Length: 494
Image 1 (cartoon, rainbow, N blue to C red):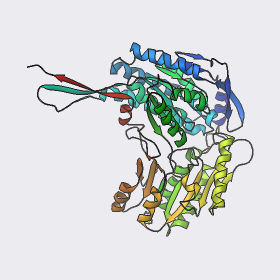
Image 2: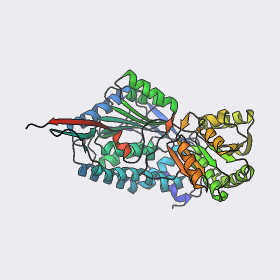
Image 3: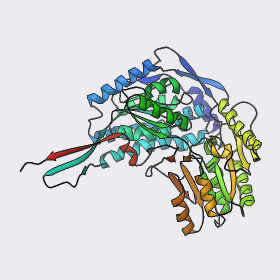
Image 4: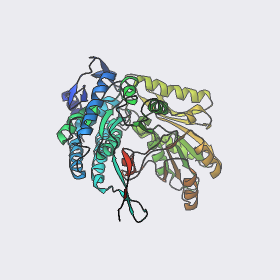
């Protein structure tokens, strides 16, 4: 790991590309307009990215459709796509430090996390789908004897991947991997708050051998560039991660236009249940703190609702408060930092307003809160004495705020956990194997962790129940989202 001085030296020497990547080249928005990119750790402008509008989206969609129809990628052999995507992943790894720096400058997250987790995770996602390409088979249907019917999957066409600002490159590659592996043309639309690593990806795609038009990056506001993609008849599919409100809007846009597929992961308010029979409370407390405060709490699957049995509640919360101390905010350029800045000042104020809402409703702040001065820093907050009906327990805060809720019985814990419009993740801590299976089956969540929080890898699907969205990222299941399923029925002649 570089020292802080070495990271600063890299930052100062880095030439930041800020234009969109359309049809194989970097280009300014046709309007010439730009958006300021603010470093949330010091409030300084670090770049001005292209503010793409509908005319830029038209160019990108046109290039993507032309590339798809020409078939240089969409009709190429699985072996060819595999080789190119493996090279793409290798190039991401080779430029890990520059990409990590862009990620930290954009989002305020610790450089140690960007370089050790986010960027390697992005490369791993591309590589996993590269290796999966030639391991996905069709099917032969069990029909009558004079019929040969087979089921095949073919690329859907033009995919728009609309990704959030908390893990820009990593979540982006969760979508790029399967969409490109299936043979689609992909337009990546990063958040206007974190576009720099996505832009950098454009030149790597060309170097890897992706044909012109197969991968493009459109930058700009969601309500402008994102809306144009959502309503474009030349886009067949949108893969989205972000807020529930925007996910619903994308579905409306699809319904009012060409019924494009909309796959959305739309947030969570995740329950982390600690039962009185779990022996290693220190370990559970450490993972509870990490599960809520990692990445400044800006994680859709963060463990933001702590449900703890009343008999151990006070003891356990004290342990969590102690564990939270390792997440005190520091300069994200410091390689010893475990918590950086929130995405911007506006989001900081939103997070702090929720803390105030909780206090007004009767919750007690046990630790954390505002960090005054330069940058969008908030120290880990533990809100005790929370009732699940409070807004802080029902609404996604998307910041380092842990809501502590006590329970008496297993049935009550399950009821509280499921009393949410969301169903992304949940966890339970217990040494009783019967309880583990009983509770896991009843939790309404796409991922349930037992005696850990948020472990996993590319082999398992990620997504949620209820208003946490539809579809799944990761695993072989994700490839199906980006293909059409076709039946070919052949009547055999005697």
